[in-house]
Image (cartoon, rainbow, N blue to C red; front, side, top):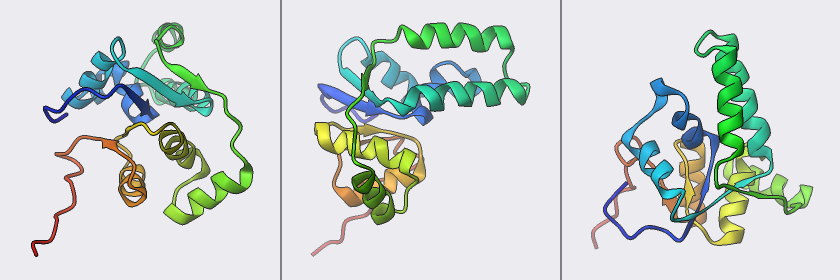
Amino acid sequence: MPATPLPAGVVVDCSVTLPWFLEDEKTAFTESLLELLPVAETWVPALWRLEFANALLTAQRRGRISEDWRKAVIEQAGSLPIGIDVHLVSLAHISALADHHGLTAYDAAYLELALRRKLPLATLDGDLVRAAREAGCPLLTDTKRYPPPKTRKK
């Protein structure tokens, strides 16, 4: 992350939380987000728990992690200081947001949460990076992977 003031809060998606537990996905960027947990209010939509658990099951089935490691991670992740947002967003709203930005409804849930709570969205998902920029949502991402758009000189 750039040397900017720490955000008071952040919405994180699976693309940045899974690397906290999957050694081969860790980066300096994802580790810097992990370090934010004690000092910044961190939020995820309720679907994050299902997405996170499913990603770990997939990693186990592909032989990337053991069953014991998956179970240990589930236990650890359940105790992270992350707020689970249970606000029920209307189907029409989430569908419209997804359609407008070319996202899945699942990804739109992260964008919607960040916009509603007026918090930066932390992601390594290219579609979410693009959508957050389009929506004017503050964004935390790996700028080496997703450099900021070039501004035109006047």
